[in-house]
Length: 328
Image (cartoon, rainbow, N blue to C red; front, side, top):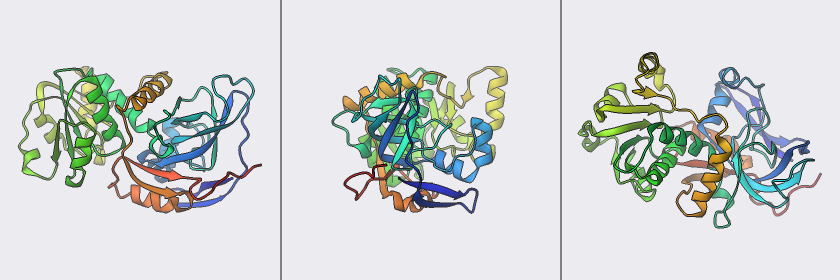
């Protein structure tokens, strides 16, 4: 099978598309024919900083990246009863094995894997990772009717998911994005969309119960200005030069809950992938697809994501232009 193989990690990274053996599912594993994968911020982090990724995940380095996938079940290992060949599935690859930037990927049946609704095409289905991380903030905040949230960076994979999940919870959502993404934010359900570079954003006052920085770029003085006195802040990473780290540490030490980096609860992935499948089927959650690339163009996809300018997800289609998959 064809796969995108990392031949060099770090700032001088290199990815080449080559032939590797088609994986064979072991006991309790399924083999998925990957119809769509993504290149995400997580993938870029693993590509540029593999040692840090290994420290965080405690897993060995892998040469095929890609967290999100959507495709069809191709074959089953022994002991698998929850899936059948031909099932349309999406979800997230575990760190312990190769990723989804390939024509096939093997996954344990215990991985977060959900059913793709019949109305959703494959290229709109690899959405789990961003939505999963967004869901942690929605759960941490306890969003509901009458609550107000400002989502900064509401055009990325986490941000677009957070807008939709917050609206599903009943909150009033203000999305802050670049001017070119205002229409996207409104289309996802934001009650108000604001260009971060305009006076409209600079003039916002402390009227929000919650602020979520979905890109790690909001200066501390700004998010503190936006919050009510008892408001709470969450960020998806530590920001440039770790700008949020001192306040995050102080919040943890004092147990004030004022600032946090919410993470999904252990064991919650399968419940969430089922929930997300239901929302997709009901038309209450959809992917925002920025660009699509063939597998052979994956280096270009990485270069684009590394600009920090993408909106939603960047999709890789391993089978684009090919009628039938190769057989072993």
